[in-house]
Length: 411
Image (cartoon, rainbow, N blue to C red; front, side, top):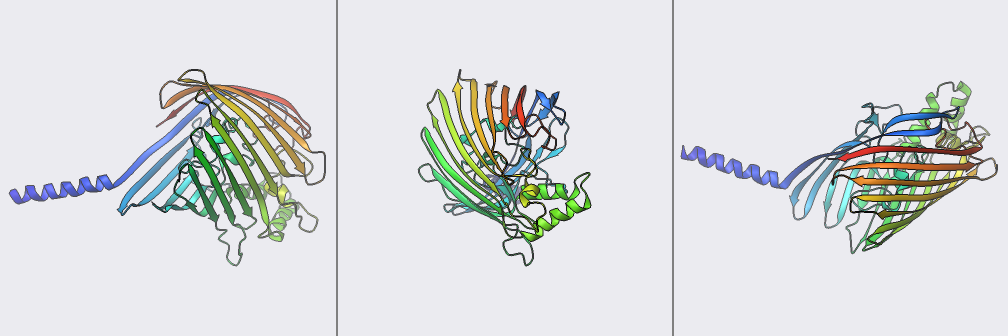
């Protein structure tokens, strides 16, 4: 009897030690609201809708860490996105059933920093290393953002498959990282690969940083934006065989060439009673053509802002201010301006957006928000007015506005 009790005690101590060394957390966000747009779709009709993930993408995640001793830890993150309004998956790659579409990584961390392998974002967006998304706010409201849904929202980061990412240990507010995504194409060299790097200083009220992201054309690109757009063009409803052949020819003719290249700078200052932020991004797309057929930037960025030829460069500027009205209530404001250049030399397009909102925290995990935006464009389609459709309708743009209320809960 005594031996049995001793054995149970020893087993219990091992279980307690294992529990202390290994931890797994289930977490998530459910964000949903009711929204109105005065113009939507190809015919610019008004639209009421229930949308998911307006302030933060709805998600379910699992993360864990095991203490390996000597300051070394093994870590994993598995995070899926979903549309809370209908239960469908989000962040899925076109033509696939991507399960953990937000993040799927495993790696090691210690005094040297951390190394993670899998599907992950670049430094522009990172909850673990600081990232640069803190320099923007209006872009979070995905239904109303000037760039979300158009593959140009750089402060949200780019999800990259087959990637290896290193993050340096934070030193007096300085942190950064580099990432390489493999194209995984036999004999393809650098085709489909991704190169990314970022650096940020955040110590006290002042923060500033920069980010670089470059992806290359390939048959199996690491950049999920290229996966989605190329797949969409290959299977687009109504696309003629000749158009699809031109799309394929464009990919083959430009194999290994740079598809997108982005530079981003941002800064913020926290006054205590409010926070001022600003950022700038330049996104360029490949202008090459295969034997006079479709340009590749038309394939990877078809009609993003509406033109007879796709845009090949965007400069985006944003400035905003968030004010603490009370300990629980915040006023959110933002102004943004975008210049759009086109391959065919048409007049440069312009987009201006004004944003205002309030965010009321009922508790640390639950908040209510109300938002409104006004978007005016010239020589480009208005992305708010053509939500969810091919953005070639109303190519001269014009004005549109939207508003909505929502609730967000984290767990």
